[in-house]
Length: 254
Length: 179
Image 1 (cartoon, each protein chain N blue to C red):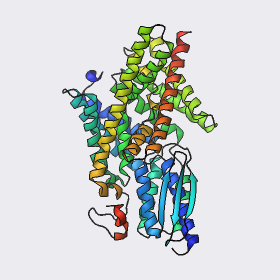
Image 2: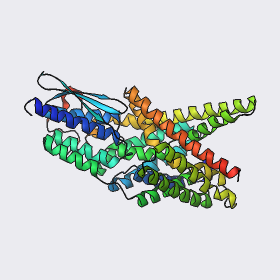
Image 3: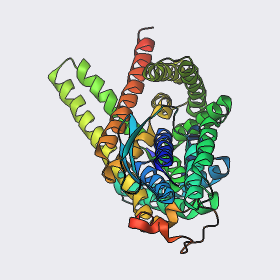
Image 4: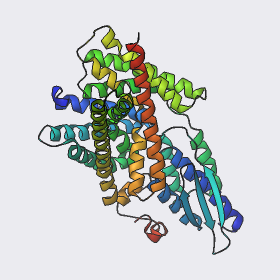
C-alpha cells in the first residue's frame, strides 16, 4: 500500500465490507475483528463506528490526514453463506493473498451470489416448523397442518417482499394466512392438539437470529446497535402476533 | 408440555428443526449436517435437564454451552464461522412461544373488559416477557462463553492452512486483536 489514494480506496472497501457483513447478520464482534485484521494487512489505521443503518470508517495512513467513509447497510435477510465467504476473504487479505482490487471484485461476487431456491427454502421451513410443532407435543395432524400453513405463509411472505411490500405488512399477512390455515385442525376436528398447531403456525416468523445478535452485541458493548436490532426483532414479533390475532378474529366472526 | 415425547424424538426433531431453519438463513450445504447434530445434542441435553428437576433457564444455558463448544470444534471441519453453526442450532431453543404469548397478553390488556382481566393479562405479559428475556440471555451467554474461552480457534476457523496454536505472521496479533 502506498499513497493516500490507496488508503482511501482500502477504506472504502473496508466500509463496504463491514456494511455487507452486518447486513448479512454478522455480530459486531466478528465485523470488527475481520475488518481490523484486513486494515493491519493494508497498513492503515482505521476506526469503525457501527450505527443501526450504516457504518462509518475513518482511515488514516502514516499519521497523515484522515478520511471518513460511509457505507449504508442494506436489508436482504440473514445470509450465513455470505458471512462465511467474507470471513474467508478477510483471512486471504490478512495473509497477503489478495490485493484491495481483488478483494473488491470478490466482495461484489459474494454479494451477488444467489441463495437457495425459494421452493426448497419454503419446504425446509415447513419441515422445520412441523418439527418444532412436535417438540411442543403436537400430533401428526397438527404437524401436517403446521407444515402446510408454514409453506403457504412463507411463500406469501417471499412473494410480497419480492413485490416491494413493506416487510411488516408481509409478516402480518403471512402470520394471518398461517393461523387461518392451521385452524383447519379445529374446523375439521382433526387430531387432539389443534391449539398447538395454531400456536406453532407462526413460530417460523419469530426473528430468532436478530434476538441472539441483539444480546450478543449488548454483551460486547455495542449498546446502540443492540438496542436497534432488539427493537426491530420486537417489532417483527408484534407483527406476527397481530397477524395471528387477526386470523383468529376472522375465524371467530365467520 | 414436553412430557409426551421422549429424548430420542427430541433429539431427532430438534436437529430437523435446526437444519430447516438453517436453510432459511442460507447456511452452506456442507454445514447443515453439523447444525442438525449440534442442535440435536444441545436440545436433548436441555430435555434431560428439564426432566430431571432443572428449570428452563438453566437447562437452556447448559444446552447452549454444549452447542457453543461443539460449534467451535466443528467450525474448522465445516470451514465456516462458529456462528453459522451455533445460531441456527440455537433457534429451536428460542422461546418463541413465550414471545408470542407476551404479545398475545399485550393485546389482551388492550381488550380487557374489566380490571381483573386487565391484571391477569398484565401478569401474563410480565411473566412471558421475563421468561423470554432470561431464556434468550442464558442462550447467548451459553454460546458466548466458548467463544471467549477458545477465541483463537473460533476466529481462525475460516483461515486456509490453519493449524491450531500456530501463526504465520505476527502482524495479525498486533494490539491483541486476534490473540
